[in-house]
Image (cartoon, rainbow, N blue to C red; front, side, top):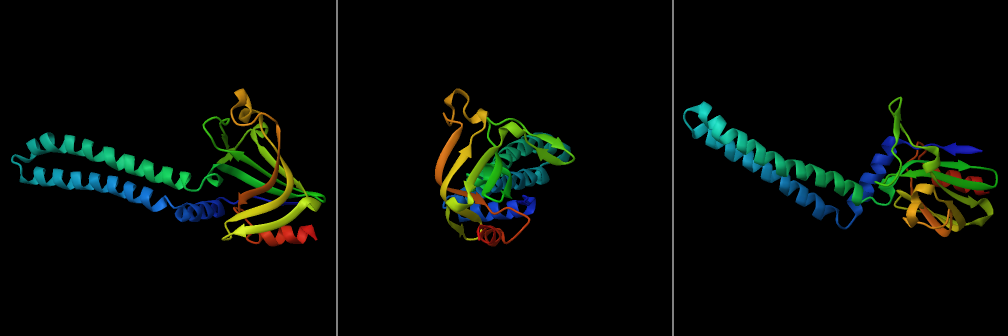
Length: 208
């Protein structure tokens, strides 16, 4: 048995590259920069009013407080939109947390936790995010069932073959996403966010 553990730095790199390849990335980033620039312009205009106003203390009161307030709003929105763009443009992989591969003698398993509003909250333990064991999603495929393993730009691993995915109960609550606890799929993909850089080769060697 061999376990391939997730790597935070690799995950950030992969998600960043996936996000920048998304067709909507440039548009979202430009909009974020525009909002941030509006805040900068307001601050510059406010400073000019303060510097040209006499007495100076009165200028701070009349122009400084309102100017700073109006400037902060678009800047905050711009930052929020930028962070959202990084997440949205890398979906669904940006919602996968702690993805781990386990290579058993007869099967491959990929275990991960989905980060959604509906998912159970994680707890912090020794500076690490620990997710509830019962909230994990498990992809499992027999070694003999794997037809092909490919990669998309070295960022995503795609496994073709008859497999099953065990769904956690929170995704089945009130028929929210799935009705059955076990789903059968012919293809599955996950981000190559591991400490090892040759995951595809490791899996190929394991199959032989």
